[in-house]
Image (tube, rainbow, N blue to C red; front, side, top):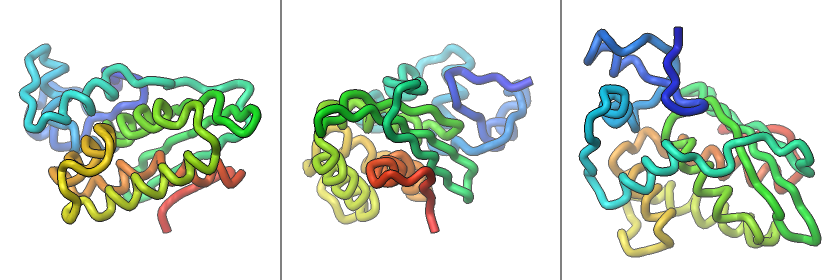
Length: 192
């Protein structure tokens, strides 16, 4: 039996090795393994950076986590290295993104990134959303060279998380590259 503390989240093997009472599941969540364990135990979660609270809020209370039945665009993004999958739904009206949502089977960083992304792009034009995609992906990919003061709070939170967990850069960018593919009318996105 799989225990999911919120939709789409999976525990990783590290948690199992650390505490045998944690139920076995598959997938990866290295970015949030300590936090997930603390949440399951009902204990407090110590913040390591000022952005941990923002990331955790978007994991616990993912915004726009739903399928859009009337979506104009839908795209599935996947990361074959970790098994993360994200579906992005867009409703366009009069050259604006009227609504955006996602569903996923993914780690916490992908979920938080998708949640923040859907909030950030609502009301924007597709061109503005594409510009945001390119900016966020570029900042995440060069996270070690970026000053903490650059970008908005969402971008700083994602960059700080990737700095702490460099192997999770693809997790943070997956929703964004999936959005880019959705804007281009492509049904699938992924890393090559």
